[in-house]
Image 1 (cartoon, rainbow, N blue to C red):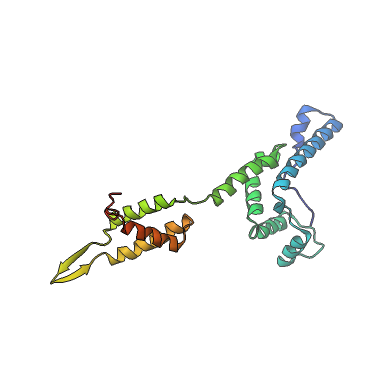
Image 2 (tube, rainbow, N blue to C red):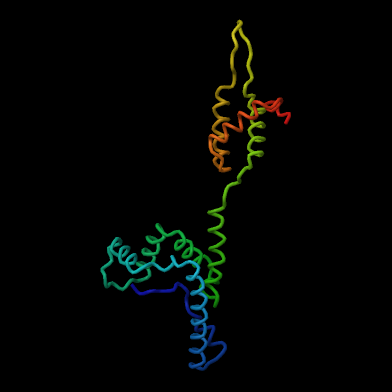
Length: 207
């Protein structure tokens, strides 16, 4: 497979506006490619997974039914990129970004511009959920208890009837989810709940 960097060369027509001399055009083009390759090297240095190994290339070519020595056309390359992108999210995003705006392909520092956008998208995908301190978790538990009326009971025909059993179950699930996000074990959660039971007014939200 012929390796392509995905960034097209300087437009010859644009270069010709600066000079009618063929040698000058070639010099401008060579300089553009050289600087863009330097920019590309920075992108790959930070995200080496953008360059698949020879083994991976051969594996995907075989998977797609390409002959070992087949010269791939653009349609084949698109298929290859899509297949590799299924197992390499960074590669998929890079290709998607590069194709989304001509500036990424036509700018001397196009690869670095791609890298900036790539970092934004990767950061958005890996942003961590809010975590809670033990105090915040206890406060949330108390707030939910007030909203759900956990522990409310009434008497009917001389028998004590517990209400909101479903809400209790849902509250417990919420407590466990919050504890997991905060990195608190279920054992620590139970201890925290038990401590609140021993604090006067805790369940009513007075503390």
